[in-house]
Length: 414
Image (cartoon, rainbow, N blue to C red; front, side):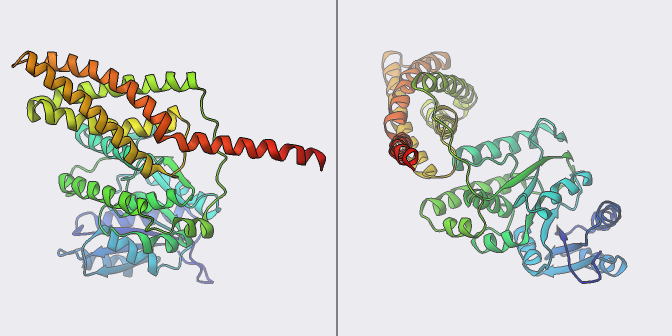
């Protein structure tokens, strides 16, 4: 529905590739819902990225049948290509997209869009990972989704909960600022968009959704997961090297940042670090028991330490030392990996000593030895994290405190 003045408030893009079975039902259902739920001008854009079945004919027929529906076709396959093309060409104030299978209940559309129309938020996403979300899907997809998002949190320090839910919206001015810096044009596209938005200080609004898995989905989970891992590494490298002009984006669009919270006391840091260490040790033990029969003792030890080290550094950064925001995150993770290397050397040495004393120890003996070595490594890790990795935060806070004390007499005199 477009207003008499031609102004368009919302453009909802439905990216499709060979969706001749689902497209008509999706668009018809969506149009009927929008007519009843939205009073502002809206449009539905079918973004066909190189379909080879009957999707094109169905899309063109739907555009001819329904007012407010348009069809766009690209010759290049890729969800990111489809969204980029449709969003860049749209005159709407708010740009959204949803998956053609309508896995997400459409009742979540108004709360997804409203914060962007009002100007309260810059991006808005649906999340399946909050407690008040209602999700129906198999354990395999649930595990993959939660593992992927946990890796995002650990590797890049992001705060949004669900990067993969196909139910997102963005203000058009924000999209214009971010899209030139998003390199991926496939499944990692919207994850990269969210990472850059958060790093640029933009506000991301999350809403819990009701979501039902589509058992007929043709997405190659293994290949998509591998591409996503490559995307995480690439984006982390780009951010570390300063290739994305985050400061310029923040200057144009960013919101005033919250004042940093006060770091816990030394005793509080010890208690919190101990809690993180306990969970990390338990996670390591569980991962090791699962992976040791498949990988062998040394390789399993290395892999399990690497995974838990990334998550451990992220948890200690936020929970133990009270550091928030993206500043120095990549450097701190790199330093955390150096600390991991020392811990790995310590635990590996313990395995060498064990195998020298007992040529064929069982997995239980190895686990006990590694657990003891991990306790020692945990003490070493705390000392290095506090004195080296997160020392900059402490120094900066002292500087702020000194400046505040210097400013106080002047303020009183005034």
